Image (cartoon, rainbow, N blue to C red):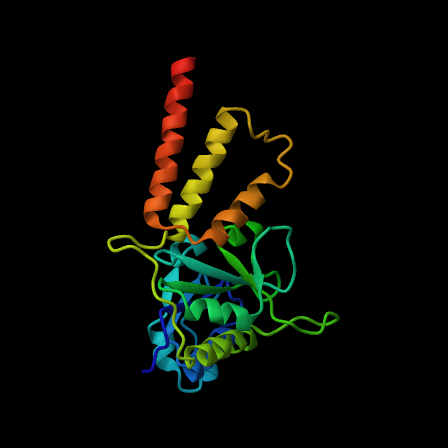
Length: 243
């Protein structure tokens, strides 16, 4: 089976098995086969198979996970699809712009699609690096999950046909930081800011959101995360010596 790039499609808490089947069909049509399901209401399902219309192999290989963090394990660039802002400061792209980023990216990529009725929670969005917003009628912006999958993967497929590839700037022996490593750095930085009274949890304003946006945009390497966390540990040691 053709499989374009290292891109996984993640469906979160899908209510209707038919939507899983339709999404699998959309994936196979565009040449993708890495499907992850986070706590679907019903799977396996005859409805999913019926709507897959021949994409049974995608369903059979689907990876089931209990939470989004586990479904994103190993991914270093994570896009969340959402139709509306939830006051989380993440870079926002159209599907085409996101596809161009994916084409030039050397690591594993995940595109996350939320629940049919409520989308993704703020906590789930925090696990992602960037937002994909599909331009649509502002008075009726609701898309079926399979339609959204089809649009995003169509753009990735078209972009992959362009013979343009940036030379890798990742030093030998290093790699891009994974999403859970960046989250660990963010949590570590928040803890140190609390320790030195730089961050007031009673008046957080937008500080944590802006930090998340900064790290999501920066494309940190694993070695860079290690340097920053080493520095933060040194700060904590020095503060404790002053007590």
